[in-house]
Amino acid sequence: DADVTQTPRNRITKTGKRIMLECSQTKGHDRMYWYRQDPGLGLRLIYYSFDVKDINKGEISDGYSVSRQAQAKFSLSLESAIPNQTALYFCATSEGRDTQYFGPGTRLTVL
Amino acid sequence: AQKVTQAQTEISVVEKEDVTLDCVYETRDTTYYLFWYKQPPSGELVFLIRRNSFDEQNEISGRYSWNFQKSTSSFNFTITASQVVDSAVYFCALINGGTSYGKLTFGQGTILTVHP
Image (cartoon, rainbow over all chains, first blue to last red; front, side, top):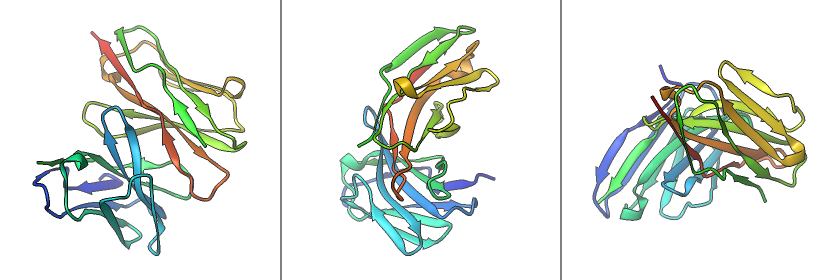
């Protein structure tokens, strides 16, 4: 079984809809991250969490919110999706500043 | 500030050729960590290697090797005898050791296509 899982893997939605992307990990890591990947822009950090009570904004947090429900679960919400949020979203985990391990990604399309 | 530059946007080779992917980084910290990740066509990001700033030993893993040179701020990746399965986007990345946050800064990626 994969150490970092993301659901759903693919999602198509309409402008204005609320969307939640979920991430779970079995690695026992304390830190979790959400990134988005856009062609030509590489990966950009949306939010990161050091533990359940410590959540921080990344480079591009506007339009997104997160919830760290447990050490192993970190969800990303788009309260009112817009087309320029169409992207590939990755969850990642790490133990402290050690290597970040990525989930398989969620391909989100906002029409 | 930290920055990672992968000047090669795309590389195309024929199977069995050797290929080197360049990575140049900028950081003011004396302690930092460098990474390479592979993103195959299926889309996932696969960790390949981590290197600490205080360890300049080169690394070899099968057909993969990495050349870390602090003097030129480079961390280049060589694939020997390339195979079609090596076709992917390769990202170089950096974390500074000087802060508690550990921001992972990615380069723009190099698209490698290996033709049969």
